[in-house]
Image (cartoon, rainbow, N blue to C red; front, top):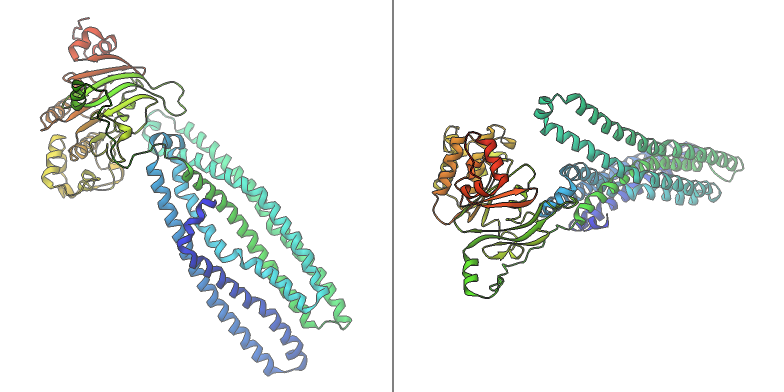
Length: 588
């Protein structure tokens, strides 16, 4: 939680003025019982109506000044808490964006969403309440005790005994509830994860008639959250009755002691009424403090969860500038010339996902020359997507090295690879906005001509032309107003608009028919320049004309060569091709 304090520094003035004005308001409240005592002992006792009216006007003045102090304090507290939460939320979002794929995979999107939303809102509310009430309530309690000593020392001893006992009760309940609030937020992560999973996979769930099972799973997680909330709620609920009982006992003792001393002629009636009012103020403030402590407990738990994310190392380090090793592949001129012509080189690369156990890729070795088209094929889970994700350094290799243009990917600055490489992932993702916004993501100064050219190459021109507004046509969230094939073509056009040196198509034409897929590949092959293309596909027809085909099986490179060569030498490729073209003879 200490890590979050620096986010309040820009609001130091507001963080000081908010509790200061609250203390001034509390001071007005502490004066009120003394004025009432004065009215009873001097005004009512002497029958002085003018004095009573003067004191009444003074009470109204105290109320007006106190209200002004309260509104001012609330304004400063709101400004500080909202500003604090805004800055922290931005920092958290920026930090999440900097996390490597491995870190995001480990954390999970559900817990990150919870910490960005629910935890941040709770934390903001906690800061607001702390600035307004954390000092005010103790100030009223201690101030009431001090004022009572000025009235009568013996009667004030009741305050001296009651306050420590109340403090111990509050502290004990707080110590019990803080760990439980952390568990509540963890259970909330689980419920949110199930909700997200069900909403995104609702079609699959209904297709397999799994509604009842998913409802049962959600009910179980929801029940766990409910039971934990009830437990921590019961503990927190003890705060009010316990404090009420203790305060009422103290009030009874105070009235008894005061009455005896009034009968003895030591105290006046107004003094006893004043001390009773101070005790009543303590009741109100301790109830506020009890509720505040519940809020603080939740805010502390949420603050720790946010700080945990900020403490996570991004997982990758990037140099400030490109590090070039002219002799990295050692010495000879022919090796240097070969390196200059290589677009991508995998040197004995192995990779294992964090916490994954077995290696996803093992000892991968190949070279892609500039201008070549590389096809990648293999069974489900063979490591195809993992391999292409290593090229733009979405993950760091466990062993070996990946080189782009003869330079290790780890030697590129943060945007050095993404400026050269355009990636079209398996799942086509469009963002809410316009088609133009989606095509120009991360780009500036792109002409409409370039965008239409990219759309034409991606076989998406007719899709855009058929929309009202053309390039400025609206795109709904997740691109739900486009079909799967349309979304895939638009994401390919977005990649082509960058005019990359390396284009990676990670099974990004799976929703396209054979004719459109063929037209897309032909258009990409006809692009000007030495564009290196990686095509991940389940279809041998999509990669049969590639300059080089990589065949993966269980993370290992079991075949490498052209379509005709692999039909003769690679059993895995033969099986895949035969399953798709059963009528075509395969020459072993």
